Length: 290
Image 1 (cartoon, rainbow, N blue to C red):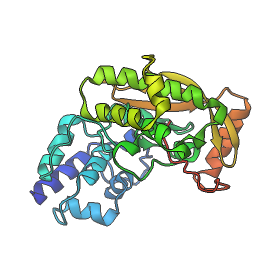
Image 2 (tube, rainbow, N blue to C red):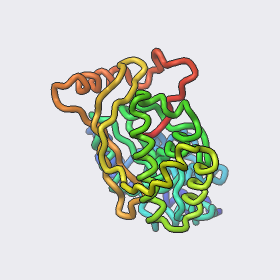
Image 3 (cartoon, one colour):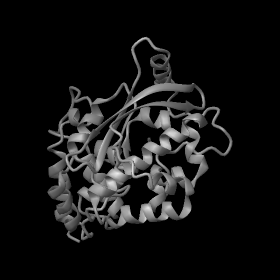
């Protein structure tokens, strides 16, 4: 690992990201052309001291997870991200998606601008990659698990607690939509081993999934109306919209409510409540994507 080159590269990329690109205010006393070190650290979920040591060419070799977080914070495209991994002497992540998948800077830029509505970016297997504070307040942060269980489409059919986000009477609809969406993903991604394993495991573990899969209904979920159960605000009626990345493997989701509606008022309250875990049902795990 070339610590000096890695540090110089991080510093150069940091200088090219404008505060407005990541939803920050430039202010009047900013003495650097791009982001401050502590801002990059915050965006990547790292300590300021740790990031400073990396830029100074010191410290331990960063993990693949840390590099992926830095690539997102610095808005690196595919080639720039791969170069970051090479400098850190880490294998470049494969094209197969997962919770550490690269997020296109264009989607991140849009997410940064959605400050008054819940929004998040997920993979086509419904693994949460990044979310804004309102999304975390609405549906909870992503689960602290790896592998197939990182995706909601898998947990939906294998973990009853994953369904607590929606009223029970809506579960059949979401089951059908999840399976039809996965049919389209499986067709597009061909022999992708992650998709094939997901389908095989779900067929093995869930009779409901198998029955729906064998109907061969296909349809990407581009938009939907959802009733989300919040532990404090109750049931919130929202419209969910999707914007797909160029390759179709990542999606920006955001939620809206008609102006003046009860749901619009609930979203306003949500920004006040934030991520406080108030009145959460005992044993319920709200950590999910939608």
